[in-house]
Image 1 (cartoon, rainbow, N blue to C red):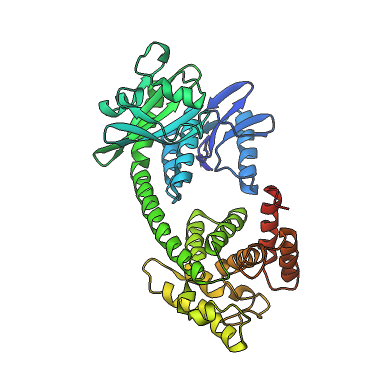
Image 2 (tube, helix red, strand yellow):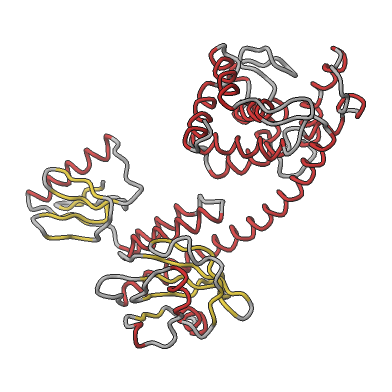
Length: 423
């Protein structure tokens, strides 16, 4: 917090405050009360000691008749747009864009639509219409189409009398749209879509329109680049899953194993708070964790009986082969490689291929190890039925207590199983 003479300038996470029933600045849903003053804060606010001390000091200044300089909406828009640049997954980016813009102007819902040759198409929605209308094409004669074709922000505060309002969306979403402010989304000099913000008590004003226009200009490039990355990522994952599936089918003992391990690995990782970037890398690593089995002869990989010590030693090499294969692929980094190389290592040094211990084993290797064992034991194989999940979990817990598996990841896997009624 910066002092300027008899005034105090506060950070962008402080939107406004209420003192003696008067609101100063902007209201937000998230409120922190200090000394009978309600401070309206954004999601960037944390209950850290320095933040609380800052609010305590601000409350004293307010009560002593001092001046609080709140951030302008433009400053907050710039801050929000900068924060959104950390999103690499399209779904999360869209949700965050729409949540932030609703908070910014005090609206109920928001939508982003992309231009598709002769119509607009919802990508995702937030707020009251969330999750209901993603697949509905919207004609260019609609409100959104009018905004796109005019190429400027527009306000529609009386939709009951406006024939351009496309009621098919409201019907599908079971949502009543009362008013709209929207702006084209630009990338350089090209329009790529529209952002609509819906339902503000008392209607939208020119300041809202200006803010939405500024916001749409700031997020346009990020939105387009993330969408393109998502398309590339989907295509790449389709190819990788086809490779993994082919490997699984070579092995008599596995079926859908790579997909299952990927699913459980991501469920574990989400619950321990891995970033979007880490989740993306972990997904690639888990899909291809057994890619090294390409280098194992069929005579060993498909052997119906018990393997000899020599044959099992050969099987162990699939971790090294996998790391060597992945190291030749562009864009694959050490995190991704570590999942293939280390998913059979154990924290006590009893694993393979190198007998690594503790923190010598990378994060991905430790996560995939838990997911790999869980799926191997719980899934049906040609030589066995799948174990009861409760029995598999017991084995995992015992191994974590003996210092072989990461206890934290076993615990969050158990939480997932409980939440989904699997145990």
